[in-house]
Image (cartoon, rainbow, N blue to C red; front, side, top):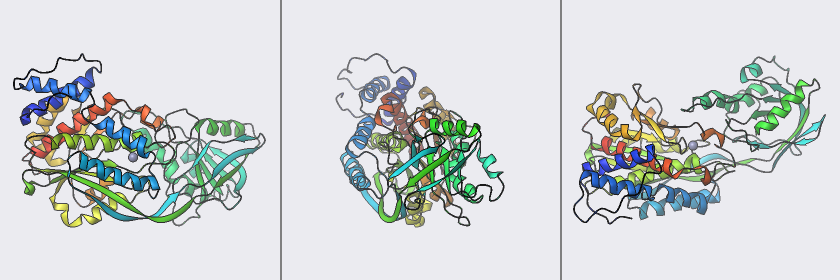
Length: 475
Ligand SMILES: [Zn+2]
């Protein structure tokens, strides 16, 4: 670590930009000699900061390494999530955040995976790689068994006549398209979210979906489903892609394969927490910017890219702002939301802060993995302000452009705030590889690039600094 020194706001900003620029452009940029004892020029500050970030000084990697190693997977209601909320309180305090506290809420009907198994029992006998979908009802004791009907798409399932699946297990083997911005997920996730109820409406006794993934690993990818209240709730699970393809090929032979499925999930209401820490602004009346990631994760992996990365990026970026000798006008509030994957945290947060909503000038959640950020979308007033140009200039060296379109979605945990009138911004990350591992046992630290993580920290820090300092009303 270089010797600490006080930097002007412009020097720090220039340094953040230069640091991220080096990361975005060339991970192997050559090391510079430590700066001399003379006060740094902006270029000198930039070099200092670049070395600091390249050397892990952003702390994002260290935060993520600790979260994935010391805590691991963090499903809401688990003992690990209880430890994680204390971990977040300790981290925020150690990093110099103010007003560090946990806001408790009750997560109704938290879902717990039990024993699970599935197998093809005829015409061949094969084990199937599955993960129950979050929120799925259990199978009856001893499991369910039935003939499988395979559909190529959700639309094909929806077109099946009423009662045509009576006593059968519906399978949808719809692949997901790989895209940079994750739009392929938005299209494919409908199968996981709604397939069970569509199948139940046609008489099915269980539902299996091809994992919603762009990867080819055998490991399945879980995620939440939503039941239609008007239809019977049937057990539902995700198949590894190889096994979904195997069932498709067997079904194409003519004789319907038979599958046996056992899911022993349970639900109960549990305590949960949104953990908060602030970098106080120098003009409290200028309002508060709410950012963060979600601390909970699915159970099979380590919750590294979803969403340990988002927690680490935003915590590290806010901490860099906190180290400025002069804080921006607005307060930066970091929130580690405590139940995103099956919902609850964002609603609890919006409800608890309804009175304060007018003071919250803009909000965003970082929850798209650990790929490099490449696009900033702004709310209306920021997009019209000179702030837009300022951000475009500051972010261009980091290879981030400002989108001509306005931000539509700030992340699922800020939807409640958005509904209450809080504007949102969106930093889109390269999600090309994200869905290869998302929600699976392969969501582990080794998939994260330290360089990409630090590029995100620089991008968030620059964005927060400019939003925080801007005289724009934003809302
Ligand atoms: Zn997430």
